Length: 99
Image 1 (cartoon, helix red, strand yellow):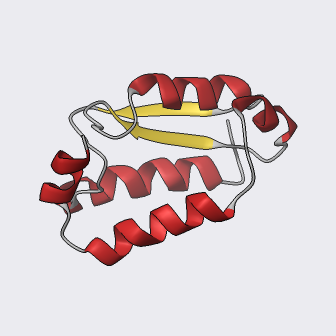
Image 2 (cartoon, one colour):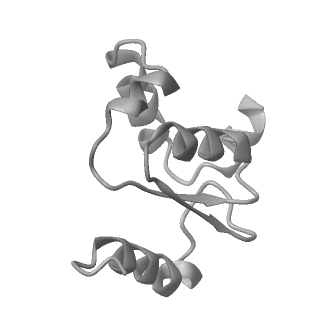
């Protein structure tokens, strides 16, 4: 797995930042997410090689009222071809009228 991640990395510094951020935080579990009261949008790619779909599903299930949007074919990165789709989902989520 690490070899695959390294080979697809465009900027090793960003990967290091993720590692440092993860090491700097205390243990956090999905159960802790039940305390989230803000509306949550979980966007997740169906082809993410780093985090399987079960991660997104567990996050969305743990947060009361969370909305899970699966992006077909998207991996762990945000391709520019999906900018409009992702922006639309975020705008929908943050709209004052949540009808």
